[in-house]
Length: 199
Image 1 (tube, rainbow, N blue to C red):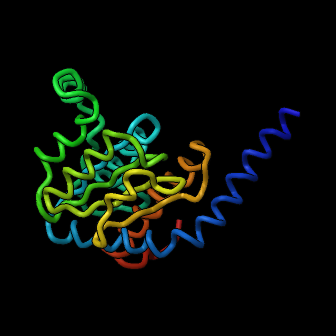
Image 2: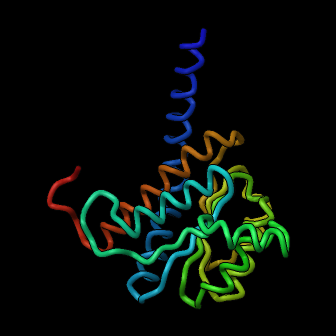
């Protein structure tokens, strides 16, 4: 029984990825263009999320500053989830809702991009970060699930919404990780052209 339950997790994840591929290919391609334009014009990428999405934020920043699958110049990306002194000071003095927004206001400039991850789209800290980015004339790439929650209602025409069509947090996060890898691969392709051989 346990083995069958494990197999079902794999099958459910695979089924959702097939479904998401149809829905998300075009918006992911648009997100790649937004990121490539920002990087090419000397701007940076700020990334935030809570819990597992905080780990995904750091994962994306690492792939951009370091490398994804091939060597290329470093790309300017900062995960807003890593500085414990900022996170605890802001949380203590202003409330957790502002831990990312204050960093966006401090670091974000017009032309920069905020990548905001929230499986529900309702996380208050992500909602405030999106508002702060828009105040700074930044473009927002929002990775959510379900209907996108409160974040979806804030997005403008220039922003990009990557909403995974599922209710379960685990399934949404699995597609978010694949989406982040698609963004990295797409950026490498746009900035550097076709690789000599695919890994």
